[in-house]
Length: 439
Image 1 (cartoon, rainbow, N blue to C red):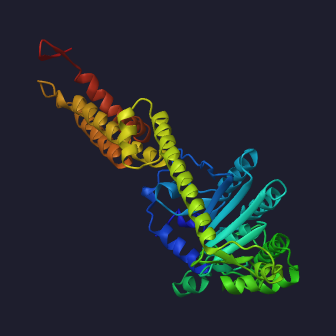
Image 2 (image 1 turned 180 degrees about the vertical axis):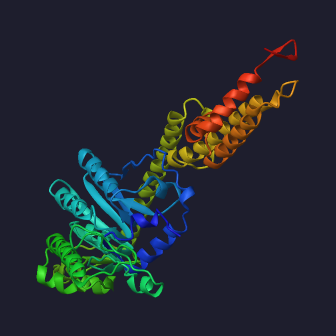
């Protein structure tokens, strides 16, 4: 069955770990077409999180050029490149922000938008300190972005790399031939219409797409080389699409340090070099001093996170009240349910639809409830009943108001509407003193 949501992405160019992309496609395949609410205006902005003097920008889930409204409504874990750039602009504009930290946990995503976002991250290094941490997975497009930070670390079990770009087309021509079908594409050029189901994909078409993929992959290589200060030839040799565990990624120069989960400290080749070359007479912190310093930092960080969370909840309440000024009770119900403006809009759409249905039902009852005392068997009577019956069915099928259904039906079946009008003219009634009287 054709899935219009899935079809938006199937032939895109991807900088994403393949198994994660497959899981993403399976998730999209579960979304039914009538589950999408394309008419809802979804607020795409995300407020910048600042802790102390550090702006924290999360990069998680599938990376898309822009996250569609339905993805937010249906809980698809995704981050938009446009959203990352917006948060970078906010962080650069804040004078109290001295450091920008990218919190990366992503398999990568679309190629569209990643290069511009990576360039913006690298340019931000000219104004403020930019660091990044990979939590568990920083693959493909996500690594492209993380590699543009000044320093990059990862937890010990993190998978890093997957440098490369790909796309996929399915050649259904053998299947079509087996069914006795021959698909003919009328095209203006050899490469037009590639991927039409049932039409063969030629070697020349494949070569043209390969050329594009190679160029995109080279952009990836050059970005990593510039961001990590590596030889492009060396990066090109690593651009096989594979992932490395954090320790191996550090040895290859893809990251700077591995976070030790036991001590929450970073280990790196540079740190080991600095430690071995330190003068023996240097004064070192004792274990007690280190523990006290860590505890103080933890308490300060926890207080900042708590204050940030409280502020976010206050802002969520204000946003809901501002979005639904004429229905404060609904806004408070949504706040209590933990909904943000996006989810609340989707819920309100259902509320409005239910209210409209109630209004339509009342209008229908008013139209059909007062039958004339003297039944008229004129020719227009049957047409009138058929017209109203079809209008009611159209209203239910298309979920539109009775008025809109009658208008649409009058255009589609003018002869039925003419019969309806004739019947109405012969059966006009006025209600006077509780009784029906013919005029």
